[in-house]
Amino acid sequence: MNIPVEKPVLVTSALPYVNGYCHIGHLRTYVPADIYVRMLRKMGYDVKFVSGSDTHGTPIVLSAEAQGVTPDEVITKYHAHFKQVFKELHVDFDYYGRTDSETNHRRTNDIVTKLIEHGHVYKQSMKQAFCTTCVRFLPDRYVEGTCPYCGESARGDECDQGCGKHLEPGEILEPHCKICGNEADFKDQEHFFFKLSSFTDFLLFYLDTLGGTLNARNYAKEWVKKELRDWCITRSLEWGVKFPGRDDLVVYVWVDAPIGYISFTEELLKARGEDERAWRRYWKEDKATIVHFIGTDIIYHHCIFWPAMLKGAGYSLPAVVVASGMVKIDGKTFSKTRGDVVWVTEFLERFHPDTLRYYLVAQSSHTKELDFSWQSFAMRVNKELVAILGNLVYRVLSFAYNNFGVVPDGVIADEVVAKIEKTREEVISATEDYEFKKLVDAVMKLADFGNSFFQREEPWHLIKQGDQGRERCGEIIKNVLQLIKAICILLEPVMPAKMEEVWQQLSMEGDVHTVQLDELFVSIESGKALKEPTRLFEKVEL
Image 1 (cartoon, rainbow, N blue to C red):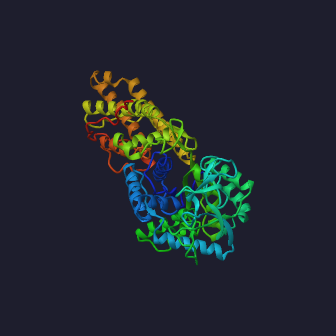
Image 2: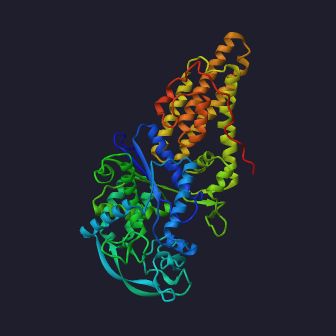
């Protein structure tokens, strides 16, 4: 989707649920979103990038009870953990908040109140799982049982082991309490429902105009066409955003979590000293383009529940939803109990964060499943980052440093300009199509061309052929340095730290993180002193 450059862009990443440590499966959303934001800025867009910790819901309460601490203590611990992981990975949010903030409570209350006032919410008694041993109603993940649709094991709000269908309270079969393990009964309890079924026509029209990836749009359309049922938006918990007028109910976490996108925008603009109504440009006045990056497991929530809520409350709608494929480990679904998981902090103790960023987008198309293995990671690093990119940078800069010490004189050849221009077009196209593998493939082809060009011209022979040979050698070197400069600019969104190293070795002025694509065609300055190069990457030993 071509996004109008004259409108500001708000990019969001799905909120990490802060009841455990970050594993590489989480990163399939955040790293591509960061790459997208960095590239849009190089293309001249005004972009803001927000996310934050999802802090409500049953799993956090369960974690707190299991550890003998308060929900706030659990949140504070893992919120700090995720912020640190994002910092180390150079996922550079403009604002990273928490959904338990006063701003998000207030904004959630406003939206739910608007839905009630507009006639989109009603109350109804329903059967709710109740544990006679624990003497409590059992919301969501306090309940485990059997999916009524496919017969697989399921948790209270989702068939996570089978068909993936969202389950309303009371739907699960053979329920038992997750705390004590005893069989649960069903008792009547009053809850509030959002009239999702009345938004069918709106959603079908909205999804036809929604930009982003086809998997998000098509998956959501299938659900809407089957039949939409009204959605229970309250839970029997103490931890969460209180439902307006009720002390015994909180809003369902999938109500207040995406509202965090709005409250984080408010908090960002307030922190920057903007007018307190500035957030309305993004979320009430349709004066910005809103882009959501999510995983395929939450398409239903972001393409059905969320836009219906926004429409019902009179808010602006997202223009783009980009859904990533899920991550497996050696062909197996992520499982902490079976050990099929790679923790990010442990990974970063051994490998540079940019190698992980590169792997996550280079290994497969964004919408396809990514099957992580140490063999494929080693192959990407050794055969691409070391053998192609690292070899080009170190070999050429070493030759230039040892034989000239500065950027030599010369004219950039039409062939080199054409290759850079072609790569620029491919990178822009890949960005607009949310195909980040195509982006890195295009830049790596340019690096491959740089190696071939250097090898073809044999500057090590030219340097020995007197003044004329030295002059021609210098011209060759300047052309390859121009290619390295272009690669550095185009690959900075993927590997920001490593490309900053290259930028400095080239003795370039300015900031590689803020330089725009126009700089690709500015000739690298002759006479500029070069720094002694260092190797960019180390081989990964299996």
